[in-house]
Amino acid sequence: GAVVSQHPSWVICKSGTSVKIECRSLDFQATTMFWYRQFPKQSLMLMATSNEGSKATYEQGVEKDKFLINHASLTLSTLTVTSAHPEDSSFYICSATEASGTAYNEQFFGPGTRLTVL
Amino acid sequence: GENVEQHPSTLSVQEGDSAVIKCTYSDSASNYFPWYKQELGKRPQLIIDIRSNVGEKKDQRIAVTLNKTAKHFSLHITETQPEDSAVYFCAAAWGGSNYKLTFGKGTLLTVNP
Image 1 (cartoon, rainbow over the protein chains, first blue to last red):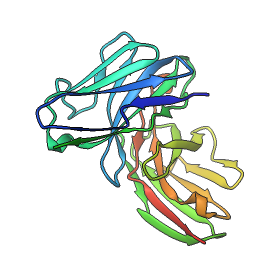
Image 2: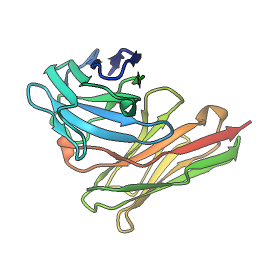
Image 3: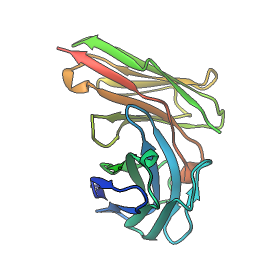
């Protein structure tokens, strides 16, 4: 149980185009989903936290108009990289926690999406 | 905000030896400390975690220790096996049900057969 999927697993796009990445919780309801960015051989940097039905909370330095996050249901969150540029090339990983009031519910991670902007 | 430092960045051990990875954190409010294993190109997976009300937790070959006074915590892997080779990340968080993780930079562990 507790499986998170991401689609696509990899994407190559031209500079200036927009790319949408989906994150789905397959067998549980995720009140909260997180989006991370991971550069090669580096750590995971939290970009934003999204709660179902409300606006995402972005971390300092992350442009909310460039990285649009939508969490329309308890099983789906999307990240849209708008007007992508080569510096946006990275590994984007989502995670999700089950709907619960319990402290520190485990975050289940998706397999990641490799974005390459030419 | 929270800052997590992790050492070493790379660690190479012989099969059967022990491996220790250390992390320090800056925010004394942090009270949740998970460790993740990430194999190349794959998703991070939680391997063990510890909360601030305990000083040590063990799960088979893996153990984590926490020193809240010194604000550091460590991962101990005993009897290492080649399949333990991966990148290990420590993280720290506070906030209970609305927590956010701050990750260390990771340690590449290589277990040589």
